[in-house]
Amino acid sequence: MSLKNRKNFWKTVISIVPTIAILGGGLFALFEYLQAEGASRVKETLAYVDRYHKSPIHDIRMHLEKVWAQRDQELRGKLCNNYNDAKYTQYILGVVATERLESEVFALTTFFESVATCVNSKICDESSAQSFFCSDARSFFNQHYRFIAKKRVVRNDPELAGLLDRFSKTLC
Image 1 (tube, rainbow, N blue to C red):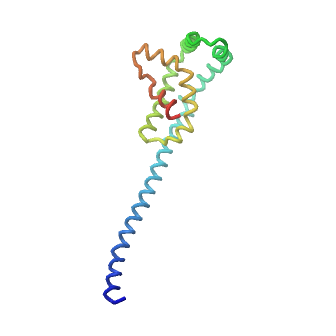
Image 2 (cartoon, rainbow, N blue to C red):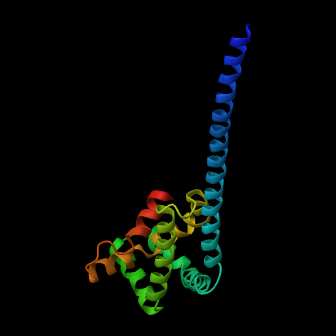
Image 3 (cartoon, rainbow, N blue to C red):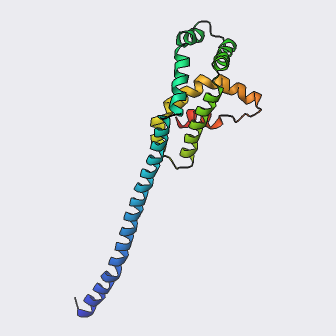
């Protein structure tokens, strides 16, 4: 290789190396950013988990669990023996009214809907939210669906608890 060819070769190499370094650094920075963003989403989800296990949400959950656990055999009987949707609906509405659960049902609905909003807006991590909340959200919505449906009619609001409905059916 002649001196001129070597000189041109090294000029080319010297101009390409910084470009490769910049691209590599950019890719590394992007990778780090995406990892930090993912960690931030998980952190936000864990903040919801923390709230879920503290007062007042925890107390509401425990009270609802206690109310329905006391009626477990009766619920099973209504669901299994000569099932009648109208009677079952009346039973659920009666328990919610008798035990004065409306504010608790809506407090927990609001909590689950805020989790859904957090996931939908990509602030919270979807898979973490699914792991922590889907089973409870689905169970809660199914248990109280008849009450929520009645309130949709009474309030003339077909979207009442709509986020919870979609969260428990679509995401979960």
